[in-house]
Amino acid sequence: MSDTGRQSFTDKASSTMKPDSQKSTFESAGDRVKGAMDDMGSSVQPNSQKSNTQSVGDKFSSNSNQNQDSMLDKAKNAMGLGDNK
Image (cartoon, rainbow, N blue to C red; front, side, top):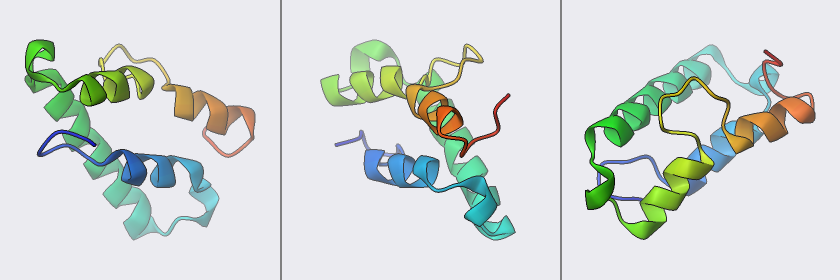
């Protein structure tokens, strides 16, 4: 379970696994906004105040603002569903 004010893990996973080509413009924009807000929440919330579950979730999704692809993004790119940067 994600911490209060953070994007749920199921929402992140479903957003990541749906190919960008199948998303509407509104859905893509919403995903970007939600992702940006969650990244901000990750940066603002000290690690010492995160639940164990949230800490693991942040590591899994690369919410450390180091400009690295998350594991989910890497998997999506490997399957040909992502941006393939």
